[in-house]
Length: 238
Length: 112
Image (cartoon, rainbow over all chains, first blue to last red; front, side, top):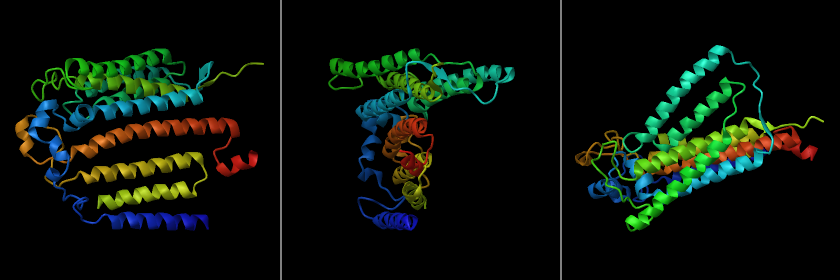
């Protein structure tokens, strides 16, 4: 009975959403959008692209026009990692035991793979304003290298205090660079460095610096979350 | 049509939220809903088959047709927040399991 009721409600909701997709001016049909009628047309205009100087237009929105939004996003991730640490963390922590014993080949092979993962993640972070990617996927890759070490070595325990320090420093520098915009320019997170030539590695002003900080912060936060899930409170031996 | 597929994913996740009793399955349903929403937001910015990804090499390229970069930037934000909420929900599920030794909501009520 409850399942039938749920099915009816979801079916009605889906029908309402599909019927709402009419071909009006506010919501055109799929693939028939005219970008010059939308606010996105402004992001694609030549003066605004040159003002930010980023080749990747998504990055120019995320860290150029909507940096304040990104600051809020990073704060949400920080609060959720804080919540995970609050729920799962304790004073005495030991790591969870693996069900299998990692052999020599797995340990050595994982170290080689770790180097490749870290190099790729830093490449993705540094080229966030030129190519697809950026601080958020690159930070997730840094965290995945920590997960790899946890799974491949049964004695590995990450330096969680170092990650906490890195996270705090990166987050503070992010805000400090934004505040410097009030000194050297007119607004919070204003781009006060020269934007350079579009497509160069050293271009787009403060955007590459901000993306490196975002990458380090996201990587250390997700690594902290992984560490919290793979440890448990040490039981007192009575 | 990809918009109908994304709406199907969304209501599928909602149906999963209605009928499931297992905490882990509820979190998975929430994620299915989220993915449906992401695909829907991305599909709003689609402008046609000849449009390019919004990455330019010089300002002369702006005469070409690009897909809408704004929904992609918003979905980037939404994905990160989705990761945060999923991690928090899984942490709550782990602490629930430590207290009740079950993931099922009905069994939790019986043991309480």
